[in-house]
Length: 306
Image (tube, rainbow, N blue to C red; front, side):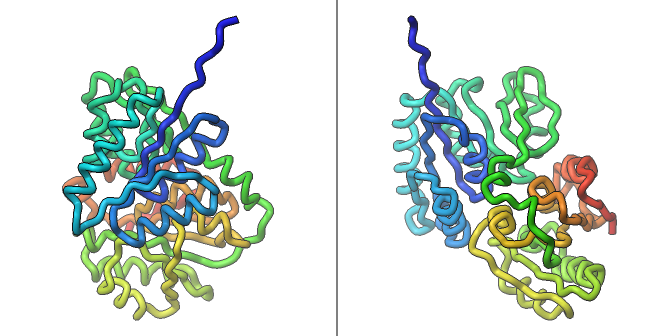
């Protein structure tokens, strides 16, 4: 009897969310190797390690130090190219990563699967419309496959089973922060106004604001001046934070955060609100229509144009 060859799977990720998606996909796989590329940002790197520890994922860590970025990048490239001959399927965390884009040059496109990279996945799908052979995607978004592309949709079902959040009662109202001021998408005054509006919508409950790991001290300082707002820093990615909490939230507000999509899949009991400014344009966010479309497709999210 001919022996069936065991598929060897390599995961290369660069963010906490990418590692969560890698865990979800690899849950029933046997021959799996995880490579985590640290970017030197303590908030990002610590959250990645928190995910790995909590979910008991054995990872190979590769570091990218800002002070030695050229040397570390070269070491990472040499190491990953060395790994290429050992695997059959390659799960890559980011379409836009320069390192992973370089890595893709050495792999047959049909052997590559992209993991979710937040709403950047929607931009990647948009950009791949011109590709002759677009990469397959493992995603929680509701995407229409391109020609010659496979889309595998998931709902974090394995994470949900592990933490058994469906049987817990609700508690707390939250706003999920984004670094929209830092990257020039919104002005500081407008962002503070939107968060303040959410605080009023929350009513008697204090609104708990969870900052994005890339938000600046200037923004955080202004946020603390909003009446009825509590700023709470967390050490794990937002998805892992809520599924490991004793109680899912009563309600979650944000603008166009990926967390609205992921958490609405994970916590069916929570109410979700996307406060989308009318001033957002394709110039500032090229895939804004795709983002809003995904939010509107989700029956658990109330999209409010402001």
